[in-house]
Image (tube, rainbow, N blue to C red; front, side):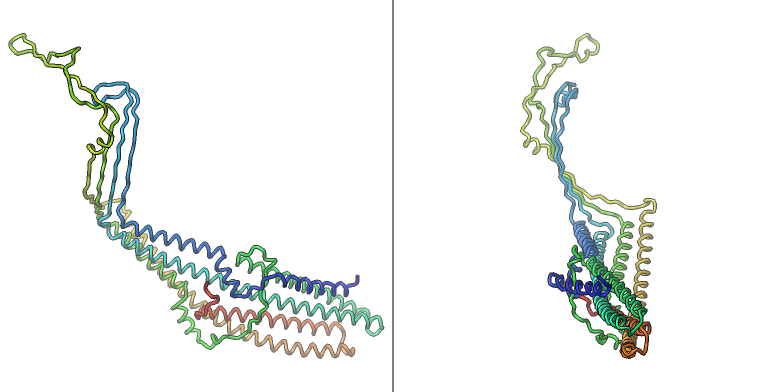
Length: 481
């Protein structure tokens, strides 16, 4: 199989396989790609978890206003030599006890820390929501860039494919001329080398298209990127009027609505609340408390007493001045069954309540150091806000300059391509009548192909630069789901 047939076979096979795959693939528009990425991108999901955690922290701050209420209960067994609480004697026995309690406490005053913590949690929740929106915007911008890169690679592949087909035809024609003895064998070798180079460029363009699809599929979290394809809609290279605005006006509008500034401002507000919370430690803390306890025992109880028959009396002394003994009766307790458990719980219940005041005096300078630490973080947040404003100004002016430069490059590339096309057509006419050799013809052709690729590159670069500028001007890149 000769080279020209092999090249033609490759072209036909690629066109056929592309046509078959296109019937099975879903053609994704830019809006569909962005919406899908917003719902499935891992970075966005992680930011969503941060926002949910911030909401949980807000619930914690609300819960701090509620009193604490805890119930407790215990049941114990004492086995072995223990004092009988009924008789007071040491005995080998097994006793059981049950106790139940209920404790409640509430903060009456703690330096307004609960109020400040709730305000801080709400601000942190707002900041987390802004951060989620910022991540969505960043992903949308990256998806737009990757999408336009695919469109460029598609167009570039068409250019390389057309060039390969044309050079293959040229190789076939040159072979005929060589066979007829019109042109030398060296011209055919040059054309074959050109076809081989075209094949390399064609394969490189295919690989670039595949990698760009993989990049976009990863942003969208698609599993089978091989079955992924974009819509063939042509995006016009127009400035949408945003370049008619002044850079200062775009920056002014960006300062009013850019999410990164909202995040930085919310973080400053959070840091201010942190300072107030830290200062609350200086204040005394007043708490109210209430406690309820009750208990029950499972041992026998004393229900009366009687004289000890075995030892009815005991000598306790003598009458002074005589030998008369002083005796007393020896009594022993009469034991009965334990009282009902619920009766014991009712009889043994007790209540305790009061106020607790804690006044900080010296705690290793922890309060002062906490306030100082919070002030440093507030200063850091203010610096971050200033830095964000400066970066936004730089980004807006850079985007404005890049968009203007991209437009000029695109216009210049179109002019160059027109000139290269005229030069190529002229060289083609001269080559066909034998006025120039194949090397000069290939040079004109290569310059024309390169100018086509440059037009495509500058076109999609300009489209992306305009989208960035619109992004700062408040034009959404995507339709929010």
